[in-house]
Length: 317
Image 1: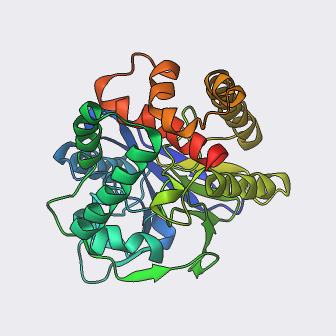
Image 2 (image 1 turned 180 degrees about the vertical axis):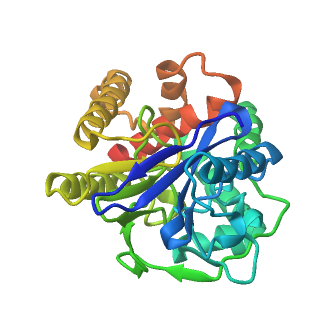
């Protein structure tokens, strides 16, 4: 077992076990297990290592915490969103009694994965055009995108939910931006935050061009909603699907706001001279991304471009 299993207790005494699992490119995911509700939230990636870490985590829940709860005992799997590092462990909970839930706007990525990526590639081409991506840079960026999928395994989801729905003791909190239907789940005073709020990094946001619930503005609406819930005392702890548990949500939200503003400041440094000359900055987004992030690791070239592109889309389109 590579990782210890963390135990988090809600205000009313519901036990949540956090299983960490190794994923591709050194990414670590978090699978949340609530035995008293026979529920798992997110399932890690499709990698064999991730699967084994999850199974080992169930062993620790049994041996260390004395709670006899196996994958075969799970009756509900809830997915914050449809990215492969969250749905890839669904086969671990493949028994007739399991109900699988995802937001209705994220269902296409699961049910019609190849069609989804085909249409997304068309949107990506348009976004390349808007951002002034030169032809010689496009094959690498396109391949980085394709490395996110399409997958080779088919996954099944039984139930589609919508914003504000109740699923047993959980309430669906809408937080789109990272995907069309990305959702957080409120249980008592704990919010399962998916990839919307992470403890150290900012999540990738997809362009509004890809869908009306995407883009920087929609992402911010979800963050504002979470802040309001924290300030009103509804939420005390955030459990993201990567990185660490967040026990001081306001401090983390504040630091995220500082980071967001810092990135916009860097963009403004390069767009102000263009605006003064009466030049539309948007076709220079790719060039600006290379100036803001001059030497990113090869794989992250796509995400650094995306980071600048969605911010300039927000301000200039």
